[in-house]
Length: 332
Image 1: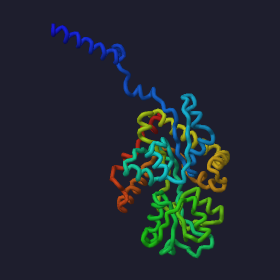
Image 2 (image 1 turned 60 degrees about the horizontal axis):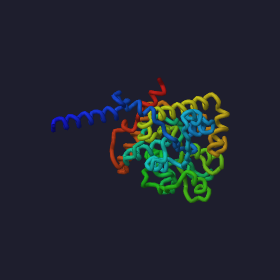
Image 3 (image 1 turned 180 degrees about the vertical axis):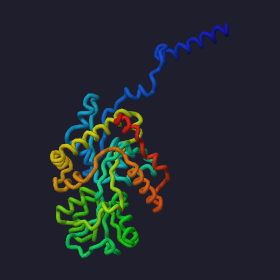
């Protein structure tokens, strides 16, 4: 009797297993289930140097790509990369364009982001500027002077390398942590002797007659690139959508190449900056999203710098920061 009860219980349990498994059918592979899922909305973080994102936003490329999925696109504009990393940490950003230093800092702090493409390469993207009437004619003249820079940005790293190239160290100057949007006022009021920033801010300062370039990254001090970041949890859950975000940026890059004048007008409207302030950035940059070996080397250089200055919280293999599967998917 007891054996019969045990047998009956086993039959019941097996029946339940088959029922939960789909009435005897094979369960759907995890990959297929993942593909069937889709996000309700995608949060895109950008700044006024995010040329590809600005163009795609202004032309409605993201909305066109995801309209058939019923996915809403949310945009958030930031002044620099560090607060964008905070947005990733708080799950308020899924996709973004930043400089090279923020993602390295993020990875060392345990924030799970991945570089999935390049946002652009601009030879003279970083620059040090002084007032037009400044008596300083060389970087070495700035010893003991105040230099404003957004600490934690690519411009900050550029400043350190530029000082080293000119026989100075960071201890030889007074670094003032200041957002790029405040650099014009700082120069005009003589609160600082120089500023270090990135495009299009350097063009903004020149156009306003508030600053002139004393040195920039075109001399090879630092390779200035932007990167396309994705929140890794988002990309792993929605790999097809991560790839399609890159597809949109490819479309934007092609539009910039073939319709440059119109692109300038669209980007100007979206960034709220005059065409004259963004023209140099748009015309002198390579907007291809492919990642070159030199780009990986740049982030390795950033990591070494942060490690040497005791800022890196945790060391890691720089290749862990990159994930090219989504780019490969788009290139098929």
